[in-house]
Image (cartoon, rainbow, N blue to C red):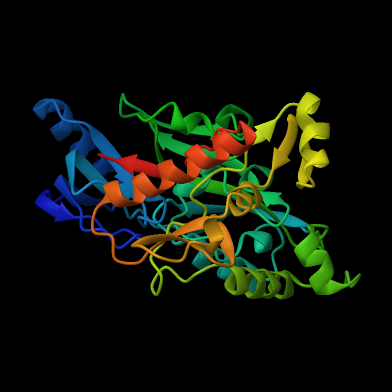
Length: 329
């Protein structure tokens, strides 16, 4: 492990940010050493991936480790499926492309989601009708005592864009295991995909991934061109008693196991934010759930804009939007 003072922190918002101390975590031993240094100095220790889901302050206190552990192994294989172990430092989208090239089903709906493999369990990433929780077998963590453990999917406490790892920062994710299918197992009932394929079901994972990439690319900005972190707000969950009220407002309501989900993008649009195309921070005109940085230099500018959006939605609909990215201070 090589600690660097005032290490620049890469992030897809294009903000200038520096960690008090930073390092690459190439092996599990690097995690142990970095945490030990932080503990000895009385500093916080955080681990990030590709910087695609963070809003970093100009100066981030403590030790920030950039996850870079890479491994890719089949740990079990049967006629109909396999279990793939992947290091937390791999790029998620590159992993999806690798899997679909092999003809393996399971993660194709999750194509083009930015970030690292290790970040996927933290947010329980999801898109186009599939969540990470549906394909993961187990997650390897290095706990605060320095012990390596495998947690089952049930142990991870997955919920909508949530997991135990948001409440257990001492558990550093170092690898995951995915359950993938070698026989056709598709989910294309999500409206955009259903419309794209128009009833065709004899599909390969590569075809589904290509469709997801097409749909996402048409709606969402490329962070390398228009700096962003993808969805800035979570879709709010309401209880069943409020469904009729929001349906009466002609708003989309998606029923789930734990209540119903509203479209945060639709709420933001109804408040007029998509039409406000001036200033350093804006809602993406094709998808107002995404905030785009058009020249803001500090996290405070992004967060102030987000606060204004949240306040207007709260005033109009009595809904409190939650931030999806983590603020790194």
